[in-house]
Amino acid sequence: MADLEPKEAESFWPLYRDYRVEMPKVESRKPGVRHRLAIVVRLAAVLAIAGATGWGALVLLLLAPGAERMRTTVAALFAVIGIVAAAAQASGRLRRLVTLGFACAFALVIAVWVAAQPSNIRDWQPEVAVLPYAILDGDRITVRNIRNFDYRTETDFTPAYYDRTFDLRQLDRLDLVASYWMGPAIAHLFLTFGFGEDRLAISVEARKERTEAYSSIKGFFRQYELIYIVGDERDLIRVRTNYRKDPPEDVYLFAVRGSHENLRRVFLDYIRDVNALRERPRFYNTLTTNCTTMILTHARVNPGHLRYSWKILLSGYAPEYAYDAGRLAGDVPFAELKRRSRINTPAQAADGAPDFSRRIRAARNIKSVDTSEGATAQP
Image (cartoon, rainbow, N blue to C red):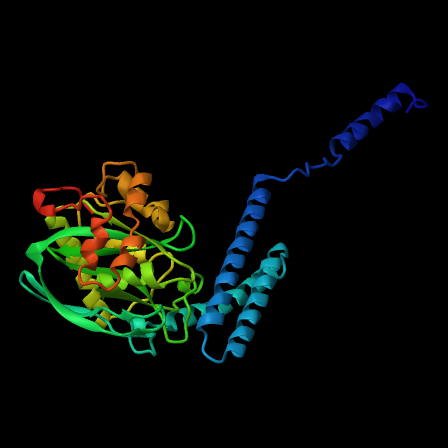
């Protein structure tokens, strides 16, 4: 434009100006909110598919019909489908199609899960072969099939059961039993009810078939039915203190504070469930339906019951949780109370003596709580 006359240059200026205005703008390539949201959604989908794949593969491995080899093959195939579906979340073209295929496969997993139904008719281990039940007649209750095995070792015993009638007006004491075998975090808990000089222990357990061993992982997958073992303390306590050696168990007996009315409500709620299981079996679940959560469930019949806590999940800490809430008897720090409450030595000394229950309590140096004296705390 320097060689043009001024008037000619002026005539070209509008064209040049328009050209500058019409130059395309370079858009920013920084990711926007929508792009970030899409990434989050895809990542969430990957995590959901991964979780569903792991759970579904175990469901098929443990619950699908057929021989073990067939179940393993089906579970592995489902795992491959899940891995492909998770990887496909990064592909725009294949994502929808592969995710739909995974959804169809997962629907089959749900069908297998729903098809697994609890039953009372199986080849049970002898310890859980007989279901207890009770007949209520006013204030009198007759409990049938109270377990009282004669043990020589943990696995060598003579099965025995008896029936007994209790007077609910004499229900005056409640104890919490905690048995530890794998460190401080995990324990088996059960309750024992006192009717004057008589005791009745009730333990919620997994009902295993003859060839089954207990597995916490399998307990999530409908592998065991639920059972209430109603037993003599010379059975349910003594087998743990005297006969289980591999691993050995440390057993503690804590007196629970509670009014007669509260203990009666809890006991009758236990009995209702004991009878219900004879007609409508249910599955045991490692997390939601186990020895500790069922104690908490039955305690909910009383106002002011304990709330769910991580100390319920890690059942070994449940006695301390109850103590901190004022539900266990004892005027010493919990560590000292627990030391005094260990009953292995007196239980081994008493062994099968008729006064077994009295002797294991006499050695604790802790007063039992008699509800007839007006205690008002809730179990």
